[in-house]
Length: 483
Image (cartoon, rainbow, N blue to C red; front, side):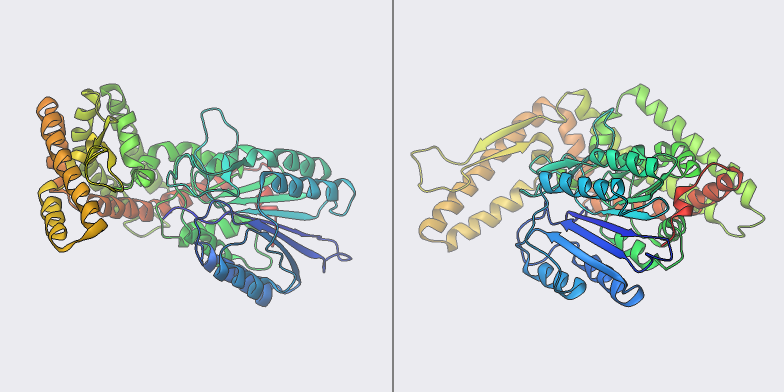
C-alpha cells in the first residue's frame, strides 16, 4: 500500500573532532494520514528510534509531529525520549520555517563547511506535473484516496528545499536528502554535484512503506549514503524503482527507467491505486503501441548486452529470468490492453453515469439514494448476485434499515438496466466485462508479475551501476557522505 505518514527528519552533525559529539535530529510529520490510533509509519519510527538509541545514542532528537494518533505518539515518546514534541503540526508555514532555520544555522556558522546535514522526508507524495521541478508532498489536512494527485491533501513542495541545497553547496556543507514518498524520483532533479538525493521510487510510481525500514537496517556508522542505497536497493521487496542522484546513478536511471518502469505497474480495483489502467489508456494508440513494442525489444537487448559484460562474474540465470519475467508480464497485460483499447476507441473509458434508487418522495429516509458509476464499474458488477443478497437482507430487515436496503435494491436493479442499455450501445463494454470476469484476480496477478520483474531487475540495475561507476570520475557526494 502506498504511503505513509508525513514525516520530515533533519539530521546534523559535525565532522570536526571538536564538534563530533554534537548530533542533532529535528523531525516533523503527521500530515495526510487518516484518523486512527496508528499510522503506516509506526514500524519504521520504532526502528529509527532503536537505531538512534542503540547504535548511535549520541543523537539528540527534537520531534514536531501532528497529534491524533495515540499509538504513534506513544512510539515517539518511547523511541525519542521526553524531549519529543508532538504538538507542532506539519504545516506549510512550519515546513518553510524549518528549512529557513537550517539555512540560518549554515549562514551563522553553526553548521560549517565539511559538516553534514541529512534531510529525511517520509510522506504521501503526488506525481509531478510536466516541467515541475521536485513534487508536492502532504502536510496537515484531510487524507486522500487519490494517491497519484493527492487531490484532497494540503500540499507543500520539495522544491522549497532548493534554497537550502544551493546554500549548502555554496558553504561547503555536505547535504543529503532521502525522499521516501510516492513519485519521489521527481526530487532527484533538485540535486547538484555537491548534494546527494535518494528516492524510494521513480517519478511515475508509488513508493512502499518497507523501503524506510530497508534504509534503516542498512545504516551503519562509517557507511556512505551510496552504500546504504545500493544495499537497500538489493534487499528491498517491492515494485518501486529507487533512484540516486550520483552521476552514474542518473545515467543508469535515464537508460533503464522509461524502458522498465511500465513493467512495474499493476492493476487495482481501487482507481486511486491503479497505475496500470491510466498508463494503458494513455498509450493505446497504434503509434504508442508500436513505441512500447520497440522499447520492449530495446530492454531485451540491454539485458543481452549486460549479460555479455558480466557473464564471467555472475554465474547465474539472472538475465534469463528477467527476460522470462518481462515476457510473462507483457503477455498478460497485452490482453488487458486489447480489451481496454476498445473502450478508449469508443470514447467511453472515462464515462460515468449517476443512478438513483428512489425518487425524493418515495421511501424515506434513504441514505445513499444515488451513486455515480463509471461504465467500467457497471461492466464488471455481478448484478444478479448483489440483487439476491439485497433481497435476502430486505426480508430480514425492519424500520429504517428496511428502507435503506429497499433503496439499495432498487439502485442495483436500475444499475443493471442501465448496463444492459449501454452495453447494447457499446459492445466494447461486453468485451471488457468478459476479460475481467475471466480474470477474477487480475489485481493480484498483475501485482505478482510486476513483483517478479522488480526482483529480477535488481541485478541489471546494480551491474549497470557498478560498470558506470568504474568509468565515472565526477564528484560523488553520496560516496562522500558518511554516517
